[in-house]
Length: 458
Image 1 (cartoon, rainbow, N blue to C red):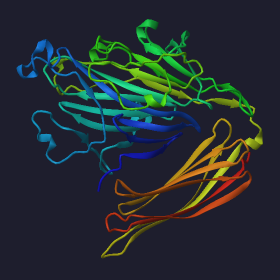
Image 2 (cartoon, rainbow, N blue to C red):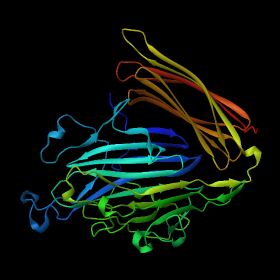
Image 3 (cartoon, helix red, strand yellow):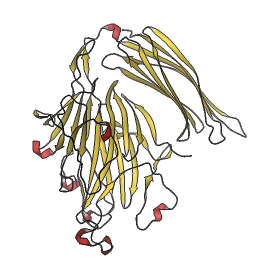
Image 4 (cartoon, rainbow, N blue to C red):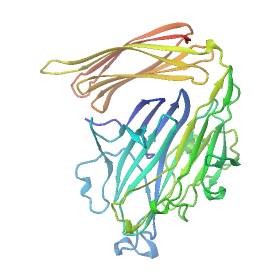
């Protein structure tokens, strides 16, 4: 069976989609933290690679051992084909599976401890020619996201640099209206950034952070005590670890843009061309997209097996709201039945029957919540994702997705939505998923009931 290239995750106070989309690496999409939408997409469109000598430096080809590159390395959903590791010229170009207690998989989704704190770790591991590239997201329940690139390998026995270009499309406030500033790391304000353009960290000094702040207007009810923010902390330079500053090939540490749909696309430039845009406008009170560019030097003397890493840190801070009337604090209860069958041709079918009741609390500071439940029978999994969002009239919008997986492959899916009025309830019955593609009719049957009531106080 194959593995599906995307999925949904609910962990701690987080829920979001993830997947390897196009040429943008492992992306996090449609992200919520503590009930608030915080990002549309976090992605890695390209890793630019530059050796001290190019492949055609001085007019000679690499056949005489002059140089390598430059390269635009991109992580795509390219699983391993038989024999492709035997290519002696181009080398392998595919993803590599992680070994986990629950089996081998291309997308790692695991809970780990980092410095004693629980983190969700999502990662992919790519072979790109001579390089071993691991792209990771480390996430904790305090709002931190740590994007990282780990790299090893040498195309030539020469010093070279990896320059990962992350694109952070935040979604702070309703509407998505932001301002950008620079501060000392954890300290005082330095400057506002009011126009689109490139950023060089050293312009503002050492140990800085970029702060994207929501300028959402007043709420219908309650008062905004603190707007939502995204704080991006560039990596600290450390020559011993290979974390360096900009180079002539990659001269910037970042770029600020307003969101434009045509720019939410694959990396458009050739290997010799750095990030550039034709239009530059004021960005105050716009939907800000932040490019974070890092610089990682790999010395030839460190050898091909030296694994080094680089990445920024992101802290997402949800909006704080005070003065919310009691009737705007809603308790949404989801009651569900879930039945999963692993069909067996010559022996007894395997079944899993589950019934559950979960509640989420919604208010103007946490408009959206989720309930996610799974049932497992043999190698078959049924998954129900129910997302509820509070409307201004105190009804709730319910969006649901039901999935059927055979091992790691999604083989059936259905989705829908409806509204539940305040102080009422509504049921959705008759979700029936069947795996038809292998002559092996595994099934999942689901029904659920949503109740929208005022939150009970102790």
